[in-house]
Each structure stands twice: as C-alpha cells, then as structure tokens.
Image: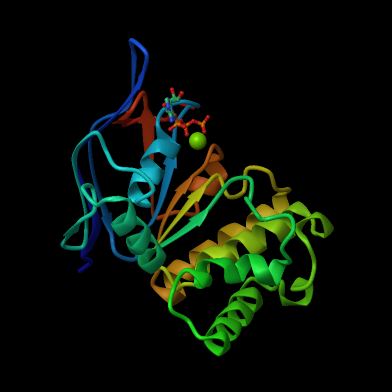
Length: 229
Ligand SMILES: Nc1ncnc2c1ncn2[C@@H]1O[C@H](COP(=O)(O)OP(=O)(O)OP(=O)(O)O)[C@@H](O)[C@H]1O
Ligand SMILES: [Mg+2]
C-alpha cells in the first residue's frame, strides 16, 4: 500500500492587484501518493502553475495547509522553503530556464552549489545526471548550441541532480517535437518505476497525460471531473 507524500487541505491562493482579487486556487483538496505519476490538465489561467509552485514550496498558500509527509510546508518562511526545496524538489520548467552563459555541465551543477557537496561529489552527481538523460556528450556545450530537446534534457538533469523526492514539471513537452516528447515522457515514467520518484506534470496534451497513473483536470481553481481544455 502506498503512503501519501503530499496532502493539500483547503488550499486557497489569492492575488491582490489594487482593488482586484484574483483567486487562482479555491479550497483545493489533493493527496499525492509516494511513487505516483500525476498529470494535471486544464485551460490557460486555471491555476496549474500556481498549484505546482505551492507543491514545490516556491510559494505559500493564502490559506489552507500543505503537508509533505508529516511536515507542514505551507507556513515555512523563505529560508526554510529554500532549504526544503533543495532537499526534496526538482522543478522542470516549460522553457528550460537554463543560464545562457553556463555550459550544460555548469547548469546541472548549479543546484548543488547551495548544498553541502564536495567538489568530488558534485562531479560524480553531475556526470551521473547527464548520463541518465543521455546528454553527457554535450556537457561542455552552451544552451544556444543545443536543440530544444537537448536543452530540456539538460533541464531535467538539473532537476534530478539533488536526487529529489518530488519532481514537478510544467509542460515539459510543450515545445518539443513528437520524438523528443516521447523520449521525455518515457524517461519520466522510468523515474517513477525504477527510481521511485513522485512526479506531478502539467500538460495540455492528452497523449502526454496518458503516460501518467492519474489525470486531474483543473478549471478556475477547482478540480473538475471532465476534460475542460
Ligand atoms: N503573481 C501573480 N500575481 C497576480 N496574478 C497572478 C500571479 N500569478 C498568476 N496569477 C493569475 O492566476 C491565475 C492562474 O495562473 P496560472 O499561471 O496558475 O495559470 P495556468 O493554469 O498555469 O495557465 P497556463 O496554462 O497559461 O500556464 C491567472 O489568472 C493569472 O493571471
Ligand atoms: Mg502555467
């Protein structure tokens, strides 16, 4: 039987812009199992990225609680959030977010520089991560010298290098051709099956979502039962 990794209870997010209030998430209830591959779909503006950011401890909810195993992460301060992220979270962004002046190797090494890793340990981990996504032959290339699919592999290597518990991916195949997308999706599935990772992936593509164990549909900040996008 699986254990629950993340538990959201009555989670609200409110953004205030002048007199305007935007409520991208409303009273969300969500349990994510350890070792689950969860896909999340929904129209633009439905709150998908907002929710990923809460799950990844990048942001706090306005009200409600989020638990990671037994720890409540919804009330951590910025420093605690940052420590928690560096220990548990790998974030794969839609547009890769690689640093243009750093090589593939240096981009992957970046998350390790805020942790307590020796130079030798960093090298071992970066090399292993690059090999895992099959991009170690491009280690000294800069992002502009890589194809989109290769950039995404580097971004995934960077998300994996700290050996995170939870990987969140925001449309990881959104900008890729069919073959590169297929590679990434199969790779994510392998991470769940062979490396016991937990993944939450946002996607607009039903075929991509079908690689997951479960698909949730978000609309206007609440989960709905039918496809809305
Ligand atoms: N920092 C912010 N300040 C104010 N409003 C925000 C902020 N971030 C997001 N929003 C608003 O919250 C709502 C949800 O945004 P979110 O980025 O979560 O949508 P999404 O489902 O990821 O959409 P997309 O598919 O286009 O990426 C939108 O109406 C957006 O304008
Ligand atoms: Mg988004």
